[in-house]
Amino acid sequence: MFTDDYSDIVIEHFMCPRNVGIINNPNGEGSNGDPQCGDYLDIYIRVENNVIEDISFLVQGCPASIATSSMATEIAKGKTLEEALKITEDDIIEALGGLPENKKHCSNLGVRALRDAIEDYYENLGK
Ligand code: FES
Ligand code: FES
Image (cartoon, rainbow, N blue to C red; front, side):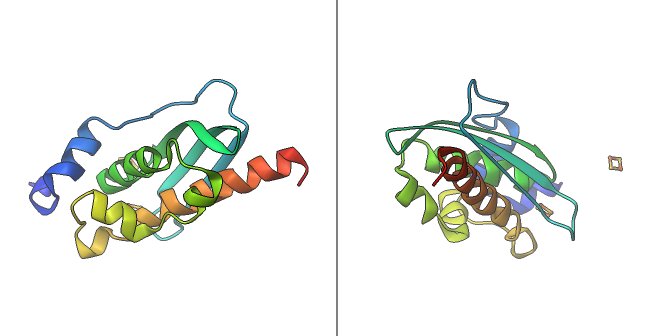
């Protein structure tokens, strides 16, 4: 069974991902795709007073991309933009209790799409 390779936390976030969909009135949108595997992630954020008040995602991809996207949004929620920009692939992998070696790249999607969404927010502000 493919689930044998995954930690309990990964399986839980895959089966029951957090923050799925499109939030109301996002003021930043970002995306990232992996050309190798074809997985693709969109992230939506609503920033108020420099804090990510709400965040959601839509992903098309493997179980690990679903779990890492879910965890990326959980980690980013409530953070300041400066803190959110510092979230790394390792932070996500660690919070998920690890990932199989060939699935570690899935955590790139969340990190890059989140940074892209924050950039989009700044652009919308005209900064
Ligand atoms: Fe081939 Fe879904 S992409 S079955
Ligand atoms: Fe490439 Fe999951 S297999 S992001």
